[in-house]
Amino acid sequence: IEKAGGRVVFDGYANHRVYAKHARYPGLNMSRCLGDLLGHNECGISCEPEVTERRLAPGDRVLLLCSDGVWEFIGAKEAVSIVMEYPFEKAMTSAESLAKESWDRWIREEGGAIVDDITVVLVRLDGVQDGHAANKLER
Image (tube, rainbow, N blue to C red; front, top):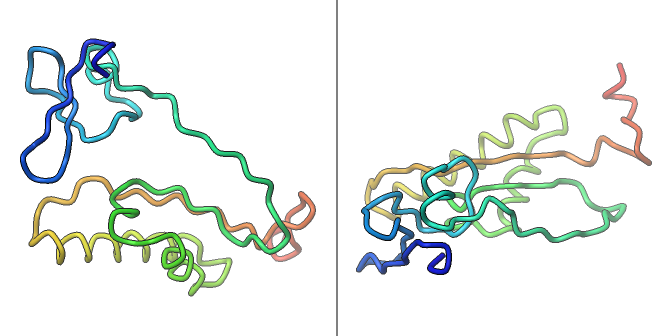
């Protein structure tokens, strides 16, 4: 961040935030983001994701891609438990349930502070077999 012209400042509470060298924007508490042009151009924030590859195993049932607004309040195992309470056909409902639980915890734990970054992308893998959709999806 600093090599690219930005600066990192502790906010006095719990976060380090990224700012342009001589400005009070964007004030993000992350070093990677998508779509923040000021952050990319003036602060050195990267749009390059941190990537980990993992080979899917036969028992893998779900893939969750979530923002820090989820992971800050819910652990991975609990998140999977929440979404797996719903059948395959209710993937949207299960994603919404995880987002709502994150929202509720954020409000409860932060005393009603603004909630601004809860995103849940859910891919159910249990309807796919050997690279082909299971019969219930082909109908």
